[in-house]
Length: 423
Image 1: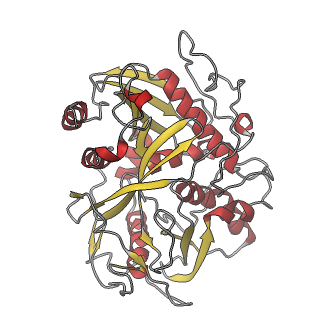
Image 2: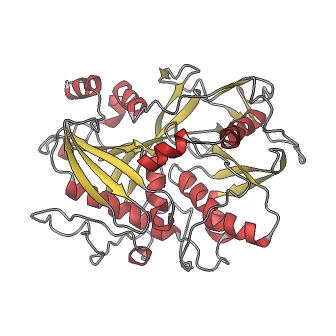
Image 3: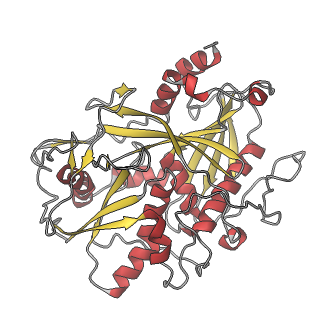
């Protein structure tokens, strides 16, 4: 889970209320093989990556699903190029000290997710907006891993990093799910520095109001996902979970991966819950596991909603960094885990194949690719004091506004100064 965007079980009816379209039988869902990539030229308000640069950029980008029902785009196998840790005081460390190891629970775990909420819980202040500062610290500590190609270094302006986009995994997850989202909009700030586009989320007014008016029940249920992690993770391989310890949500371990979606070279970071402890486990990021909680499924309608809405977000979040498995603890209304199930990310698209009018992985990935092309076309000025704010609300098109020397500027001076100086 990304530090800026932890998602947890929030209600006994937390399977969502969205809409979908009929699923394409060709959706691969979890296949990282290189596939033929094609971009459409006919979507409303946008351009394709292969079109010549227009005199003036398009003003909007359509989110209509039908426009993105085409071949699955190329998505290169993600490569972990580093990691970092955040300690109990949210301090950055360029190492894996916060990495934890999965401990498989018993068949009938009977975990109480409410345990410790009143007296053993240190909650991170979610009113403090960290933006992408932790990723920037990692970049400065690891510039040798991000050398640009000779062509990029010779471009105008010269690119100092060997990637085109830098962001959190959670921001990309929101893009993947946008064509099927009907409740929550988003704001993404983008600025260009030395040829690289940095993307950072801005809290919407609706999200701010929701955060400030959460009920006591809602706030407690946000704790439950963290408590499930405590029940199933150990600090060392072969160790045992500290089930009675303090849950401190400041702590985090994050992977940093590099990949390519269509023509877009990406660097992003995402929080990792734990890894497979077995010595024969594959190398990172393919040894990592995602831990989730969800309301137990008691009716066919609840199962259908789970497939349609919750699995969409779980798939998008795990597919991007190449996390192969999701461990889900299903709990009752009192917060007691009654069963634990494992979902293979690559097989989630098969689970939903019998759902009528369901989501499609190819639509998710093609929209994300087109949004990145749209950003490249729009964001022209290479200046950290100029921010392009991309805005979207359900049932609307993506639009943007340009802001100069405002509170939306998010690249700190310490980063701009150091990344600009010779290494």
